[in-house]
Length: 504
Figure 1 (cartoon, helix red, strand yellow):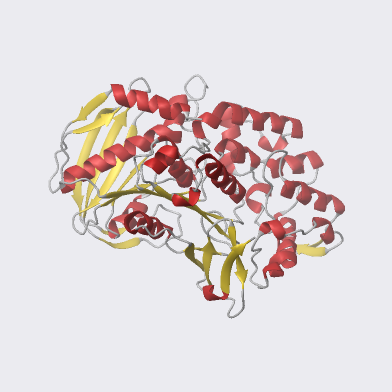
Figure 2 (cartoon, rainbow, N blue to C red):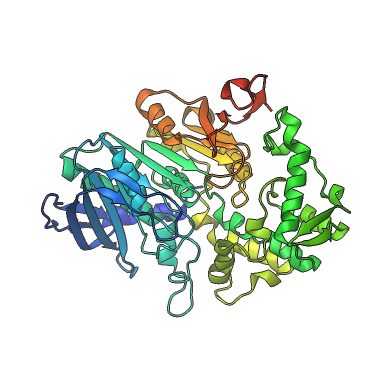
């Protein structure tokens, strides 16, 4: 099924062409640009000295240092009749450009990347672009833009967030790059995780000619469903009248890993293949644990709550045993999911998602899919046009991702295979055992998946594995090309050479 909004953008793009005036700046400048379907509000360009670029306040990440001088171009657009104001930011290294353009993805409700993300890619020689899509860069809540003045869903901004502004960014970014360097980018790449991963899939589905290679990590595919599924643990605890502490949730997580860790022959606190873990939470009944200095005995009711949470809502994927449940089952609902229901389903910012019954929950689940699947799901398996354009795409996803189920990525890949055949010719998926959402966890995460995309696009070297390393740097692994799984064959369990990829 063709995505309806992709068709709308294609129609508008064919009918509206607007020239952007030249930017006046010393050291770097932009001439006329044609942006399909948009009008220019402003354009600025200025050469920056580089140096050190900080992350936003509160982010415990070292700043990006030794950033080379770059040309900073900002284009502000609006779409006729939409009443929006969209910013596209492009950074271009003054020297050392590799001939590559990169579009950077966002996270949560934020469409774009931070300046430090741009700086990282400029250091690697990319001309790089990001956009805010006309929505506030708040990854956790859409409160500032989801509803219009009448309290109705702002569909124009939702369309920007879901799809439209992705194509604008590619058009503007590549045009600015061409003008600055005097030649078009030789290769264009997409790079993003979570929302950025969903955006990568959306690019492949709706704008198949925008990027030669796409790195779509832990993609938020099935947004309309998983976002509501993340409230399931709250619903279970409400209906069962039993809210577990994080300490109790952790006890069940630890017990599951204890039971299933060694199935693959290696004790590394990683459940290598969650499908093989048959741990029953009832096994913990009667166990005494200490939470905040007090002794707690795990009850049958506690085990039943965890069993229901792990099973997941009817018709959807469950939560993997051994994954961290505190994100979704803790005392505070996962904010991105709560605000989705409050603003886009109930249109009531005060709606209390912690009081949902099973019946009301399922009504919300169905409503979310019915209203928004065609807009934001990014689950169309028809990648025929992307394949025909010569595009290559890689996805990796951690099995301990407690926010976006890796099973959704596997399901999407399998549907693409059924739709197009020979899926590994242009789209390859790698599963990362024990890795949390985008990073973290006990497992090994890919070291440089974008490099694998680049090698595939530019050298024709399709990856059979992805080099990966644990966060502490102690252990290395080679992530296997789905549907293969890693098997220990002997030797140092911290060495990738001690494992091989086999059928599950």
